[in-house]
Length: 113
Length: 112
Image 1 (cartoon, each protein chain N blue to C red):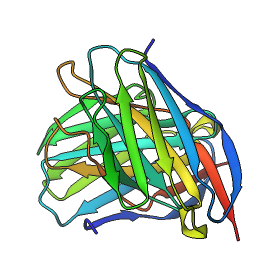
Image 2: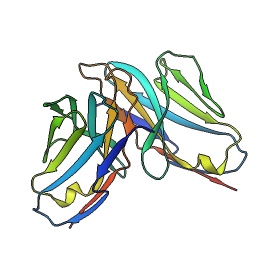
Image 3: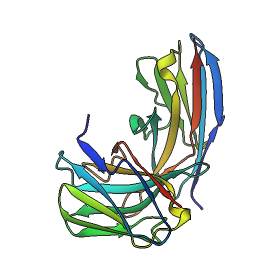
Image 4: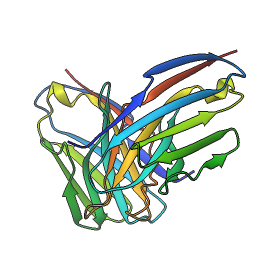
């Protein structure tokens, strides 16, 4: 199994508070992604990274920011959490952007009250 | 708008049955179609299909792509309870950064 760990795995927070989710990989893969999964929507890309300090927006990036200061770590930050950001967040990694084969972390369930 | 639609949404079968899951796609600059299996947590990669009409197999699972019909099927023969999962289909775009468009999945339950 690809070495990807997400933390925290579960978090409950209140509207308006900042939240940071961490993704750590031990595979030295160049590409890292943050997805959210919601009923009726499937997995949707929030942000992705194609190298250290190189990031770009996905289809649902509003209200989220990311940072990648090291190859192994990709942080997702909700500056001011809203109830609509209650979701399960998955980090994924890939060696190449050309294959579509992603290795996913176990997910982080975030509840915003 | 790019979209991937899967059917049925959910399915209950008995162990030993054969099932067929469907995926249709409308994806800009389509490159490939991927299938993932999601049990309790992380989705895991099953297949990537790029060429039409060529079946890919892995044990009891097989899949084929029909680019003319913009669709794919995933077959599971002699189902086992361990096949119970959500099966996700995704279209891979070939536009700058290659992006995946996921369907909402088919939830399969295999009863003993």
